[in-house]
Image 1: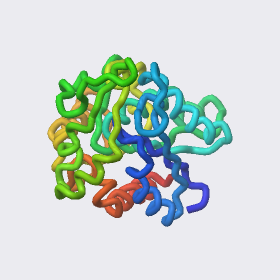
Image 2 (image 1 turned 45 degrees about the horizontal axis):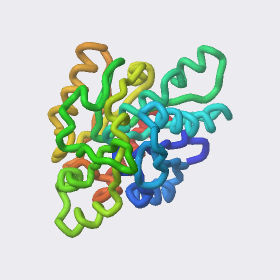
Image 3 (image 1 turned 90 degrees about the horizontal axis):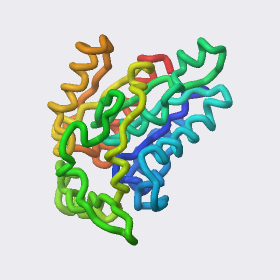
Image 4 (image 1 turned 45 degrees about the vertical axis):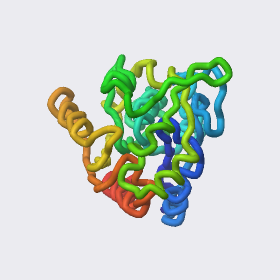
Length: 256
């Protein structure tokens, strides 16, 4: 797949450990995709830096996007869960079409949402629900963090107990500011989008996901291509081949 856009893979809250995207990345790379993952500075798994917030995470991912865009390459941003807000913030002003109008090559060519949110300016993760299945207040060296581990059964609801317990070991805490600071621009209005519904989701129920798509059509006149998986919140873990198939379809249908 020569010259195809680089796939930036953004993890959800508490899921920065590279183990989570390992199988999916390996399968995508075997198909010829160039993938780039990472770990939010506000996430406790790998790269935690006390005092880091949603905007620091956005800057971290924006730098990754720009490392390719500044060389004239296109990127596609794949976002899971609450990373959909983060990716939208990080990609602000980088839409391929807007950059082309300014005579610049490269840009964000497509956004792929997996079980996420579709925010407008001013929204944060808790704009959509109370977070009761996403974060549990805790302290780490005097720093307020949100610990997602008590809710691992919701994140892996379509797996057996052994599988759920296995993946729990890689979960981590997350700076509270990751969930509470607002998006400053709705980049999804500037870039073509696709959405993957997770029909059995117990973190972001599918009826909430479908309402986002309906409102995008009714309120903004924007059509978002949708796909559907009979899965819980984390299908990249137990059905990575199906996720790969959808990503391939997105690239093919959009001539990426």
